[in-house]
Amino acid sequence: MTRQFLIEQIKQKRSYLCIGLDTDITKIPPHLRSLPDAIFQFNKAIIDATKDLCVSYKINTAFYEALGVKGWQALEQTVNYIPSEHFKIADAKRGDIGNTSSQYAKAFFETLNFDAVTVAPYMGEDSVKPFLEYKNKWTIVLGLTSNPGSKDFEQLKVVDKATNNADEFLYERVLQKVSEWGSVDNLMFVVGATKAKDFEPIRKIVPEHFLLVPGVGSQGGSLEEVTKYGKNNGIGLLVNVSRAVIFASDKENFAEEARKAALQYQQEMEKYI
Image 1 (spheres, one colour):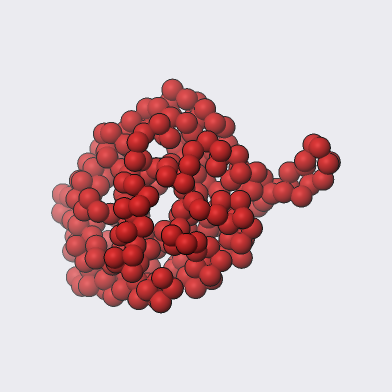
Image 2 (tube, rainbow, N blue to C red):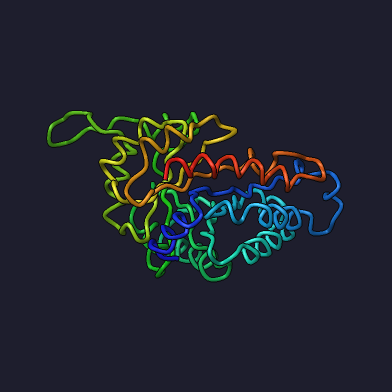
């Protein structure tokens, strides 16, 4: 998917909502759990109920990998069912030496036909480059994440050897360096919504890149603040909401309740576009 097509979808739908299909089989409605393809049937119902309200779906592969072969089958069924106009993200957080990353890229961009995959950058350029070699595919690199442990490494101060001053966070160095490896047409960055005011300095480093923003909803991030500090001229945001939408209800009306939850986010986003 091209950058321009994604921007057009955002404008048409008045939404920059990404719905996370982090489908935990222990949390889906009980009446579905006995079905042989329970995960896919749940995802299918969620997609049918919300596809006009969002521009993207993000599949956290851990919830599928944990189920073995059946999980991978559900993942493949799900990504194939998502309409082509939606931006399909594999939240896999891959990152390894070059030849291994090449196989990861092939898995998600060829075998499974995702538009994007999340990648950890800490092994350096050669671990990220294989993902960037695919035309009209996106590499979403971890920048500043929303978890408490981000302070252990991402928010460490880095010493500038020239000045001997520690005036830059490690995640800022990562954003600056990684942005040199690709372009605004194939690189995005993950920035957690729980650190909304950090979007201002981040936007000085990557003013035009899209940002994938988890942490709104169950994690307590503010959509208003994320948009205020993070939006650029092309919107430049994909705000992910997972549990607050897909698990809005565990009753037989779960899809209807998911739609209501997604609609609330879409209607708020419409005010900011």
